[in-house]
Length: 140
Ligand code: RB5
Image (cartoon, rainbow, N blue to C red; front, top):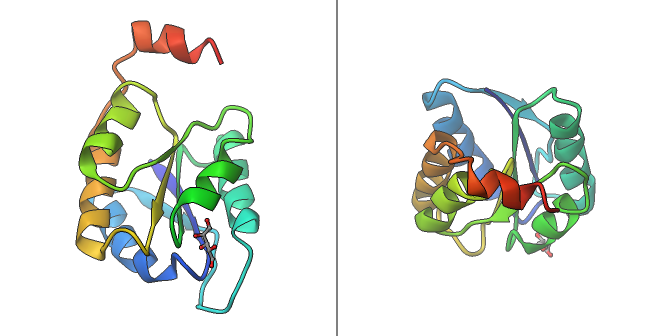
């Protein structure tokens, strides 16, 4: 898969660790920035990543900010984007299995690099269950 990744200054510390897992799992990365710790506005990066997913240029997106909250709020404004804020493994798995989440949000001030890597691993290796869950997704 091709995965778009974006972060703000609050999420930059997690990006490298997250990218390592994405590559280890054999996926490609489309890095939409930011690229340093200068203060930036998270909506810009959420928009870039969601646009890539909406256009079908990337199958999934990952967004990192301080808490993951701002990124998830912005991402869920985009038609066709189902962004899930997951700060532990169970939510990451369920967001795929039941919600077919196509964007994962995490907060670098909440999760450390090790946990973030395991969240990403679970999120990228869990399939959507379909069936009644697809019916529910079709309702919104
Ligand atoms: C930036 O200071 C911070 O507000 C941002 O990274 C994020 O946590 C917003 O939800």
